Image (cartoon, rainbow over all chains, first blue to last red):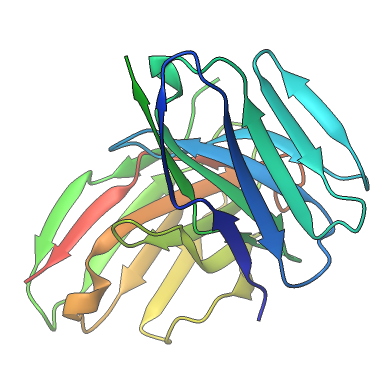
Length: 109
Length: 113
């Protein structure tokens, strides 16, 4: 079955440091979506990447889709306490999302 | 524009009982999906409904069933509850299978004792 792994599982950073989470799929993805889930909250859609090698930016967040469309990354520059949460990548199936294992980010003030 | 609303927010049931969870889709969305999220894990796909028909199903037994109504709201029914069914149940709506992302509700926290 389709599997998406994320590393690291946990990341603690000092406020102001950068953060990166990596997502790897066992199969080629048609597209990949990224979600953020705050503690006690629900997943919130951040972005979708479709094209091979695509790079998109949202303020301090940079998303990349690998050339082979089997991996992706999310990079946050100069983390803030508001960035705390779990970041999930999710591959799109025909009618579903298959979520990665998630990276839980803790930002130390 | 209203988001996705789910009810109830919390629920405690006894093993063997049945439960119905409800979801109202975001305005303009015609597809609704249900996910189960165990503590510390990513959401797992249960099924999706489009035009009131099941449009795909994950690796969940038949005792998990659902409905979508003409107004695109939806129900998730779980029969013969087991302890392992304790989880956060998330409803997600989208327009046309989520090609532009899914909007998740706040979820229903189900505890089976």
